[in-house]
Image 1 (spheres, each protein chain N blue to C red):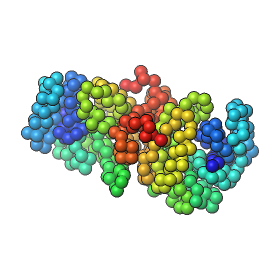
Image 2: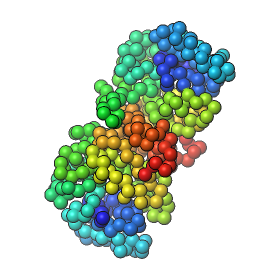
Image 3: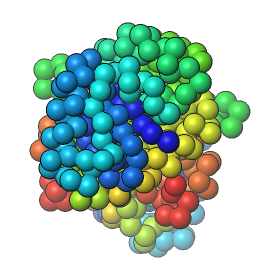
Length: 222
Length: 222
């Protein structure tokens, strides 16, 4: 299974792509500007030669043709960009990592997107795709530090449990990242809004915070 | 500073009262039925003799006269009960631990209370009080096991930072519980909704889950 990342040159997209290539996947880093994506892929391959074979840069339309597609564009662009590729994304698992947030003065606040969350809005925009919400609380900079385990949990929500399972297996292949299924896409609003809470923790405690769910036996965690 | 708990005979209220009495506070467990509250306090004092001096059972109106008051009634009752004691609660720090949730089939879902959260609705009901949202993700059963550290974080939100500080110091006196300030009461909606996510984790993984924020230096955690 190859993975495409629409918006693969941003901080989260490129870090996620590198981690997945490290875990043995072929990853298409997509961008509106294919040359920029090729440069991104080359830069990552120069820095970590073990990624060079697995990372390909190209246009977003090339990323959208992959078996599984992550939409990693800024939250305001998720719906218009996804709508543009609706045909290529039909019958596929589409991962939504977006959080609708604004900074208001000295703190971050979650917005309330139509349908309750960016992920639910994306699902309604792509009714033929299986949307999975994931990776909200994993700092891009933690993902970007290849060679260091991530030490975080990602809570995964979807109306399609088998798609959630595929995404959990994919993300579980990243060193130190544990994926937990938290139910239908109705949970995405809470996951997205919690990101604003963690960003406030970061501001206040000068941290790069993420979440761990405790009280689960470790062997049940995947 | 003595602490009153309105709804102090419920699972969270009685467990929190026992923990705070263990930490040296005088705690009034309040109930609509004062005799029931006295029985609760006696039962806890019989089981843990070191609590006997610190725990008092009484009516909710006695609890509301304490220096700091926790509202631990079911979420549907928070506003009507608080409104009843608005006069006694004026100019005081009032802790809201409620989560507006429903179980729909095989999962829990967060509701969207007016004003965005139960805590914000409570603040608008008690404009002369300083509402602090806390303890959403700490299982009552973990609190109830005196002698075992809690091993969880509680994220604390309030429009009144000094009240948040008082609550964080109070909760930080519970063995193993770390309190983190996450900003204004606008964060309460995310905190309350995340409780539904954790309950889904509990159903799926047969767990008693709570949250830890990682990526913060421990010494900054209080």
